[in-house]
Amino acid sequence: MKKNTTTAIIMTGVLSMLFGCASVPHNTRNSNLNDAQQILSHMTTEEKIAQLFIITPEQVAPGTTTKVTSKFIKALANYPVGGIILFARHIKNPAQLRTFTSSLQQASTIPLSIAVDEEGGRVARLARSKEFYLPQFKNMGTVGQTGSAENARCAGQIIGSYLAAFGFTIDFAPVADVNTNPENIVIGTRAFGSDPRLVAEMDKAFLSGLHSTGVKGCLKHFPGHGDTRNDTHAEYVAVTKSWEELKACELIPFVQNFDIADSVMVAHVTCTAIDDTYPASLSKKLITEKLRGELGYTGIIVSDALNMGAIEKNYGSAEAAVLAFEAGNDILLMPQEFTKAFDGVCAAVQSGRISMERLDQSVFRILQSKGY
Image (spheres, one colour):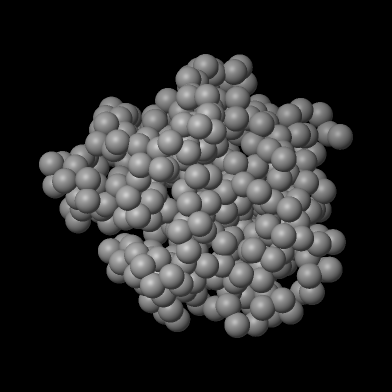
């Protein structure tokens, strides 16, 4: 192992001292099986379905970008979604962000999951803002090059510390992809490296750092987006490796970290050797049969954003949401048209296409993840 070189890879400053590698107290509700069951038993079908969605504030109420309004509060009462995800456009300055996340929580009866993509490097909604004097990382590939798990743990803890301070509960990180294709335009140095065992070690350490601050993480993008050339934000992307080939490389960082993973995000890549009909995010073969069944993952499964081109261009919001849930996702992330997606899932439950038992399974996992 190389020497610890955290100070060489972190752009330090006053806040790097504040958000150092010491544990940060974070109060959370103790998980209680009976609490989750009791809450679930009193929820309407519509309330259960709303819990499946993590969407942006303006998807709840158009025009809600940087602050909670009375219009938002009224809309949230009608669509009590499970979570809100924030992007750079929702983040103005530290005072605004603290007020915004606090107001979001106050507007919801059941605690919201407040999520963000804060990987470190080019995907960092807070650290890249000029209004936030936060420690920055060049990228996670640079962290991986040090060969030090302690550097990855510190990265997770530093990022988790400031996310917790600003009211976030989930970081959609770390990237568990293995960067095996030099022509990859979407992953690249977002990944810790090209060695699956190194990536697995770094992911575990990063998650440990996040957890020490009370922030949950998410391994992404199952079953691996590292050996691709195109971008699912825009178009269809195929992975041609066999399942055995994936298990020998891309799946290693996921499988080795299932024991500490809060959630796993499923990519929109189409694994042609396993399911040439649906992308992984909509594939029952990949999610229910492989991820849940063969690999034995029991935690929360999140679809990648359903407004991405690979999905929205081919399925539309309603059918994509239904297919994603049928495939085995618990959380439906950012459909292009939320109300159409919500109505689509409602109709599928009412018709029996989606059983109440299946719906309850996912909502129960979501409630437990919120500390009930």
